[in-house]
Image (cartoon, rainbow, N blue to C red; front, top):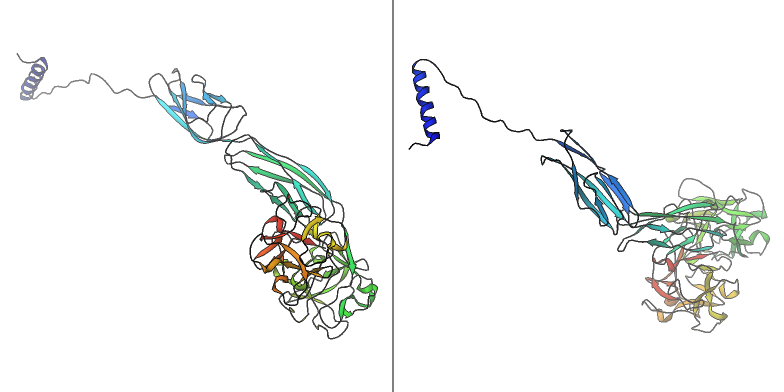
Length: 480
């Protein structure tokens, strides 16, 4: 028996054939048409930042081309502690850990139509940073502890101290704000700490300088010709010429060092006159607001005086253009590389106190002893003769008639720093005074490839110094 479908096709074909023979045609209609799917649009934020331990909620919405359709919501990739309400689209909860997730939210209606949206969702730690206030005179060592708390296990923190005053920076390893404030103005600064996954905290610190402190007073002889740094004619007037004159112990040659880097005589400051060319002339000017780099100086190797202007990295040092020649020649600021060995820029300042990066500590001849092998330590600053150091033109650093010495001329980290008889040309007694690039006041006392340093910021008062890797914060010193 022929199947019905076959019979239908045969009848239809026969009818079509007969109609065609009569010049007529036959047509049929489709029994069904394809259904049109609904369109769902999901609205969600492109990014979301949450905090560990802090409740959060985000509302997701969706529209359907069939306004009568019922929509349900689901999500994948949600940070731990969060969930989505399938009927309302509300994502809520309290994140329990760090996350950096791509969350996909899906809206579905009763016909099976769907729409999606993605959220870049970060969960960071709840970070807090302690604040504080410090009151100290300009140029005194700052060790301001800071505390960071973060409730997210495994967070990786970065620190931003760009708002700190000049001369102060963050020592992350020791949890300190350290350095020497170089500008005399109150500064309210923010320290920002950022977490790996977007958490952030800030602490505010107030830096309130209380003026400057004066250091030693005395003459500053040049290495040649019996000349001394001199206020020409004992002028006492702004604009007075600064020259090299026969040393005579007069008031015109009594210079005082100050904590802000100034060098003063007759209540006036040794100043670089802003000029163009290969050098600048030197005169005396009224001491302006502390922090004027044209009036700030730092100790350099071999007794040189390095100006902090036009820029310390260019290396301009106080120089006599006619060393040991005639009285009265106005001094200049020349390239520091000039004059080494011929005395042109080699001065011996009044004995300086050399302040450690550990607040309140100074480079010290332990217990004032003078025997060979006496320890050199960082001890509470007290103004005693045991802490009055001179940086000499011959590359030595001296106190109480003894020289700073590297025990055995060692090149090994951890070697002890001591005092020894001064022996001309002894390699163990040769020190390079480096200006720290990250602080105008900061110095390092370098011997070979290593620097004199306390063993740690927590070293006991009076602990002997050692040689350590240069460039660490604890190798900082500031002489005035």
